[in-house]
Image (cartoon, rainbow, N blue to C red; front, side, top):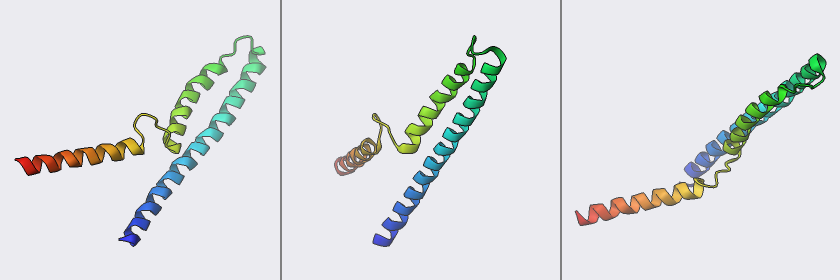
Length: 100
């Protein structure tokens, strides 16, 4: 049983590391592309109309959600809530089975 638990923990850790790695790749892409767009915006109109901020804002929102998922920050429905709900449903099923 311990061997299986370790394999399961390893696979979950590997999956989490993969999500974090993808987030950092997205972050690097964000910084590079937004920097390029900012430089292009400055070159074309010296930031009189900072249009690159629209791209930075839109992409930034997506990046925030990506970070929340990658690092497991979910204040409403986190792992603790999920495990508690699973136990609650299992107990309900046990109670139904006993009294029917």
